[in-house]
Length: 582
Image (tube, rainbow, N blue to C red):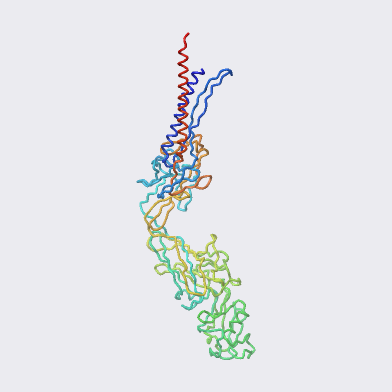
């Protein structure tokens, strides 16, 4: 057996090396094939066991192919937005067609492009499969199953509109505005705006609509008495400048309580003994009210008018101030009216703020509620503005009141999402489009002494646009781009991982199918669960190294030659054996 066994050993060596050469040749042939994974020949000896140690029976050699699927190929940049490669673990799920009965295959060859039906196919004709996204961008509930995948079809018969759902304004309102008269809240509804700003938004049909924001400086919702006399100063004399009569008296009471009596007195001293304070100038009146009348405050307005206010504004029935003439008619000389003034109720159909008593909860009717109320350090009684949002047809969409803190920042509570928005609901544009809701971010509103200034304005809508392209993102999203600047997330491509990717079964078209050795497929989102990332506008090159393959080819050639020498030697020995004569 030794002589003929050696012959069989040499023949097995020839076969094994020819298989090795075939594997190397296949690697070299696919050096430029996108996503190709090289293989190697693994040699194994087959040994014949003997019961005695005095003889030896030679074995043979066999060869087995080992795939190097896990070995990453180099990533090469391309100009196509639908080309993609995988950096790290994972495969693209594909089928030979859009038929649900087709077998799932897996590939790293991501040279995808749109076919005549809108399906994304790679260069081998395989259709890419992905998760469909809902309108809010969520994945299917059964995203862990292959049944959750659908063909990635990017065909659009029409364009895409993007209705505005959010807008953002950053505006400074002039705290010293004198362009229009500062008015009570009730009068602000019919007074001219001190400042207006328009912003273009888009409805569900893609039509442009202009929202106008009007701002009017007001005295606020608290009970307010204002004088018709203007250009007053603290030093204005009641008798010398306004012509009031010495000894005249008027009173001020809060919520119907005890009145404080003021007497016009040139000497600053008492004359009748019935007054609480003797006043000579406008400043005397203001200082005494702010010092001695609990629940009231007074100041000279932007137009030089006297302002006397109830400090609270929660809308209760008792929140009033009352002015009355006691001796003579000094209130007339001051431009004030003897009357009872009540707070404006913000919790009404007129104003979309919600009740101030809701604070610190967010306003329930569209405008934010107030963070700082009277008594808080930052509360500013002179920081009030009425804001109206106007429909393109001139009607009012929403009316609310804003207040600014003493440091110029907006006095407002955030909603549960941390935003300070004016919430416009159920806008009817009157053109057949759907009712629309728009949240206007006003967090960057401010009130400083200076010109009105629009720092920036923005909104997230767009007019009708036609599709201009499709691209894949690093997260695996299939995104359609449109001529109006809008985009739509259509699908999310999963990456399929296996416990042993080297055990996959290779099929034509640089693809693989599942096998017992590979284990079952796992659907992963890109960048999670051990999966790699989708690298857009790149392709994974073959992982074949030509230098290494040529070295292996030389080794295989030498081994094949050595095996032939073994067979030649055995043949010569056999001839010598047959030439023996008896």
